[in-house]
Length: 198
Ligand SMILES: Cc1cc2nc3c(=O)[nH]c(=O)nc-3n(C[C@H](O)[C@H](O)[C@H](O)COP(=O)(O)O)c2cc1C
Image (cartoon, rainbow, N blue to C red; front, side):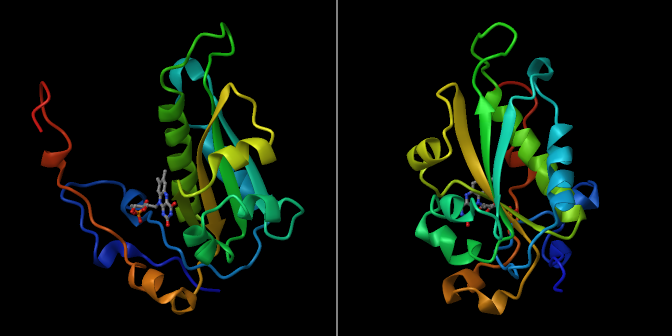
């Protein structure tokens, strides 16, 4: 079984951070091996402990395993460019968020923010487990809403591919070239003391 590539050779944080944060990246090479139900449950367990406004926990996850009955439906939501590498994923996840607070039905202005926090927890947990976790915006939201019967008070946020690391040589050429951990803007470009000054 391949190991999750460790990006530390081309990722150097400017300030000290937990190594897991820098180790998380979004490879596309996976090897088609399935994941055990308990591994998926551990990923969702990590997501479960994310912070949310009023502890609303408005994230929801729908998933399909490659060897399960829902795989063709979930796979069919992806744009071709994502299908080109996701056919070797072990699971596909659709992330939803509830747009209103359960306790009073009022709009929750941070439902997307909270769902993003849950995704990052899941991604960090997957990284710690040596798995590929790759977020995706490239899919058909309208189709997802219909096919997965998502009610109108839930937003469809993103999809996630999860799997065991594979051989980048099996990726289409243009994706193989991009199978390199990316760098980041310096902190000075993303954080300022005081008012907006970027
Ligand atoms: C919400 C979201 C949507 C994304 N959509 C796609 C996508 O549709 N296809 C894809 O190949 N990568 C997608 N990505 C992966 C990003 O390109 C990747 O996270 C970004 O380049 C930073 O690289 P890293 O995750 O390896 O650190 C997405 C990531 C996020 C968080």
